[in-house]
Length: 146
Image (cartoon, rainbow, N blue to C red; front, side, top):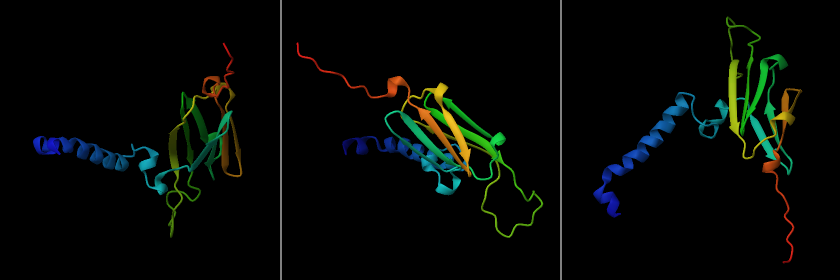
């Protein structure tokens, strides 16, 4: 309470930080957790077991040759493009599907063995299996008596 009375301008730093996050959403620089669900494309689910991280990506209408997956450290980036099948001159009555280039990055919580990553596209769903690096796996340590 004392700091609030003596330094009332200290809270402006927090306000600025909050405002920067708001404007980042409009400038498309915000983390995906801050974006409304409609702006997160493609939709991603991720889970893990002891040995792998599994990522499932909704990729309907995206041909294999227009899809790219990159793993660098703990960052997974899925990018590509989806063409508008009706063309730019179409007179749409309703349009909800997005078209054009996209890129979506997520930070994984473990290191990945990038040499063993596998990806399969089937029925519009991209399944990526990311094996955990040996340093990221739990190791049981045997306790011995002295």
